[in-house]
Length: 314
Image (tube, rainbow, N blue to C red; front, side, top):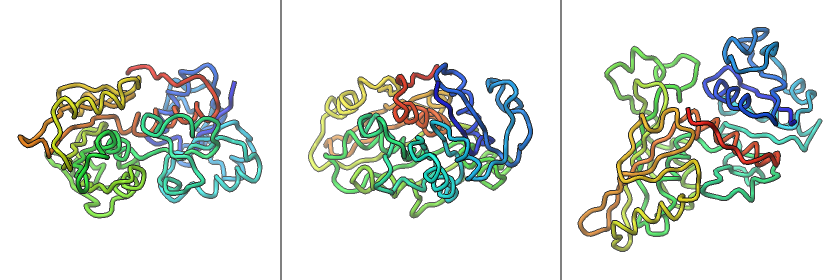
C-alpha cells in the first residue's frame, strides 16, 4: 500500500482525485490539504473518502514531514515551488505530480502525456508535470499529423466553466455565461505555448468558456504540405491511438457530451478539402478527468510502479 497526499483538495479536480484514489486498493489517502475547509470531514466533499479523514491547512514543511510515497499538487499556477522544495529537503524520492503549469517547461521534470510521449520516461520518475486540459486535447488532435503540416495548426476550443476554478470570477459566473460564449486569453495563452513546445510545432489557440459545467470540445484546422487522402487522415489517428484504452477514434465529430464524464478522449469528424491540403478534426474530453485528474493518476501510478491505471467509466 502506497501513501498519498493531496494538496489543493477542495477544488473540482481535487474532488475527482479523491474519488479516483478511493477506487484503488493499493493507494491510501493520508492527508488532504484545504485551508478553506480546514477541520471539516473530507467526506463532506467526497463521500468516497476514508472515514475520519479531515481537511488540513498544512504548510509546505508540514506536508513534507508526512513523508508520503506520493504527493499530488492540484493548486493554481505559481504555488507549487515551496511544496516541491520542502519535499525535496525531507524525502526527495517522493513522487510529485504537479497539475499546475509551473514545471511544464522545465527539462528536469517529466511531461506526463503517456499516449503521445510514451510511458517509459514516466515510469519511476519522481517529478512529473501534468499537461493542461486544453493542451492535452490539442496535442492529441495535432500530433498524428504534425509531420505533414504546412504552417501552424489552428485550434478553437470551448470548455465548461469548471475550468475557471472555484474562486468566483466572470468565467465561472453562471449568470454572465447564460446564453453566452466567452472568449478569453486570445493571445499567448499558456496552453498555446505548452502545446507548441511539446509538439515541436507551432499552434494558434483560441479558448472560450461556455455555460456547461464540464467538458472540452476542440476543433483543429490543419494545412498540409502535400495532399492527404481521407483514409490516410483517419488512419493516422488509428495508428497513433488504436492501442490506447483511453482514446477512442470515430467517424463522427464528438460533442461536449461525449467528453464529459469520460475518463479518456474522443477523436473524430475527419474532414478534408477537395484538394486534400486542408483537414479538420475534433477532440472532446473532460477537462477534470483526462484533462486533469485521470491523467494525474496515470502518471502517479507509473511513477510509483503500480499496476496500470484503468479508471471506471462514469
